[in-house]
Length: 158
Image 1: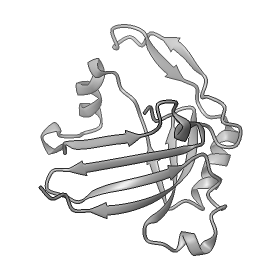
Image 2: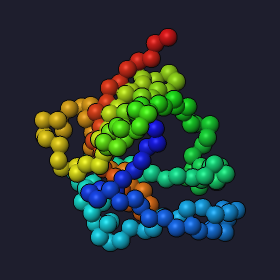
Image 3: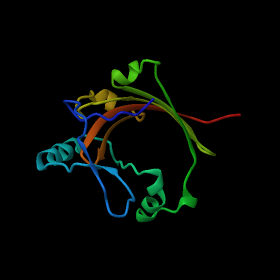
């Protein structure tokens, strides 16, 4: 299942335009910058969130340059196995639900159900107190998406 991101409230897609940066060796997608109002809205949502993730997408051909620019050592990377679940018609995605299972070698795995979009202050306090419940704001160039997730950790056994 594709992990589609939607903008808060009106679910508008983030606008994109083609660009040709000098060092990319070809066309890539450039994202618009946040307006002052959009930035203020994103920062207001962060106050009620449990975590914020900054997201980026890099072409495979730019992976090595991106990793180097971020100061990441590829040898420190962790292999992950991630699976998303949905109906053939993508009914869960259409309803704003994402179901994911993932694991890392030698560590606990987890299963997560996410609801998006969501206003961070909406979940009731009794749910917010659960250790397995989180409200997240994913910020990316050109927008953000808020979600709530419920997770369960497990130990992989062979």
